[in-house]
Image 1 (cartoon, rainbow, N blue to C red):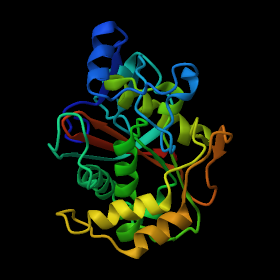
Image 2 (cartoon, one colour):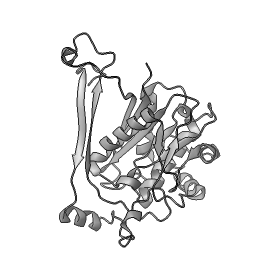
Image 3 (cartoon, helix red, strand yellow):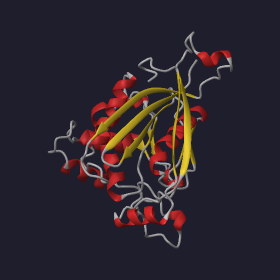
Image 4 (tube, helix red, strand yellow):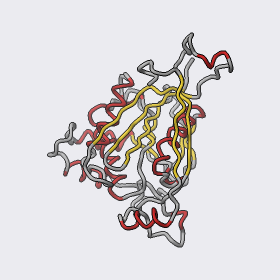
Length: 285
């Protein structure tokens, strides 16, 4: 709306409160929830870990204020309040729809891939290596986490140039928060904005043994003959292995690489193959 000059300021957000017997029973019937850590529930949500068995339901809410910058002369709120310095800047947006399955992602990673590429192209960044952090949708499911990483690896193979010789830090905060369903995207947008603003990246809680390069390579090879827009090549694996960093359980916080502007890519992939990606940058005057 702001890009199309339909509004100068937008308040947007989401909330979710799914913790009731009916919702829990429904997701259990779908075999989507983790049931392997009932005696140690704090270990149940473990995105990217080899022992991940499903997501953990949680609830929450978040809201953000989006404002055109610089504020236009006709900006009515100007006469009532002083315009604060922005926390961060939204520099790119992408979306896609893969319509593969009601609750499962397209295992080729095509939907996730197109969403991320659309955001990258919308941002007008020159190199994918300008992105220092990817906050994944990863919910701690066996298929979903691997599919998202395979999509990222495909982008590495085609668009990543080690321009800055710095790593791309990959995480999912659902290890900390669980899956807030409809509220997850709003909450992770707030996290991403605060991350670039405060120069801190959350680690991956409960990540002890990450998805192996071998698993990733097998998925990419098996999908190389499909209709994905980027085919498998060894460059995908080499660049991902050398430049993708997944902080482990004991790395509570990671500092941003300090060699270039802080830019985070954050993904939200919903049921039915509705995918969205934002690129958020630190605010520079």
